[in-house]
Image 1 (cartoon, rainbow, N blue to C red):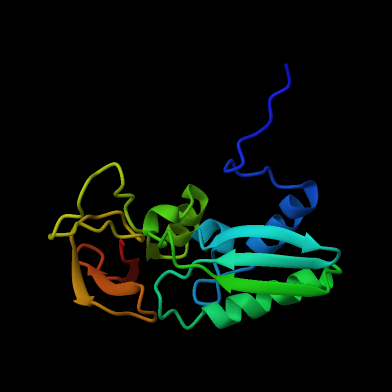
Image 2: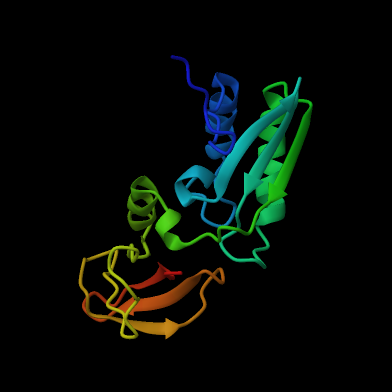
Length: 173
């Protein structure tokens, strides 16, 4: 007996879509170049629409993110270099991006760059109001908030009380 897939079941990506996703996903985030768009979790999909025509879906870290334009241009450039003539980058807001979308590799790279990665909170329940953030320099949990905003709106500026080093903390969403 042969069964067909449900009309609402997602189709598996083609080998071309998988290859193009790897290329687009390897683009560094313009504000956090230590992580790629795939590691940050903002690359949502790559779909081949026709011969040499591709649609890419991005979900920004927040709706007013100014980096979306640069991300789109960088993805277009990379896919054009691979021979794709028409690249449409579409911003999708649903489901919204959360810090849980950052891959373990992305979290590791943020910490190595001196940016305290957000804690995964999906399994932990609500984010506590008092936030214990581990210092990416010495590992101490004795840190203090200096400013709710840092070099980008998605980061806060903190300082370690133990080693006295300032550092960015990627805010949990």
